[in-house]
Length: 170
Image (cartoon, rainbow, N blue to C red; front, side, top):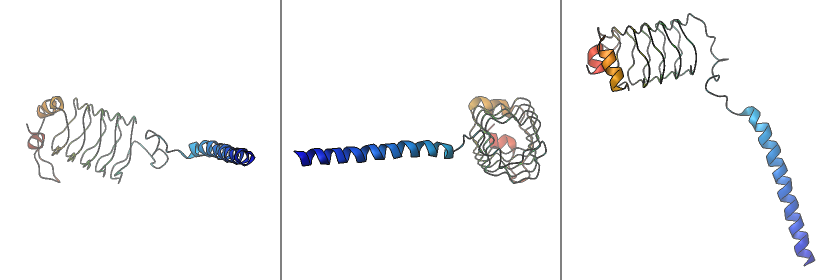
C-alpha cells in the first residue's frame, strides 16, 4: 500500500509539474501568435498614395482605407483587398488575376484595362467605376453585380485581348 501511495504522489507531482510548464509556455507563445490580417503587412509595405508600377502580388490589404490611391500598372496577382475602401482609386492596367476583393468598395474607381481573371469579387461595390477594357473572365461576381457591370461594359483588355462585355457574359 505504501508503494502505491508513493507512486501515486510521484505521478501527481509530475502531472502538476507538466501542467505548470504547459501554462507558462502557453502564455509565452501568445506573444508570438500570428498577427491579425488587418495589420499583417502594415510594416512590410510602405504604403503611399502613389503605388503605381509596383509588384504587390500576394499582399493583404484587409480593411484598409485606400481612397484615391494610385495602383495603376501594378502587379496585384493574388492580392487580398477584403473589406477595403478603394473609392476613386486608380487601378488602371493593373493585374488582379486570382485576387480576392470580398466586400470591397470600388465606387468611382478607374478600373480601365484591369485584368480580373479568376478574381473573387463577391459583395463588392462597382458603382460609377470605369470598367472600359477590364477583363472579368472566370471572375466570381453575383448576378446583381453582373447586371450592373454589363450596363457600362465597353472595350477590350490590352493584355488578354478579351472584350469586357464578353468576359462578363453580358
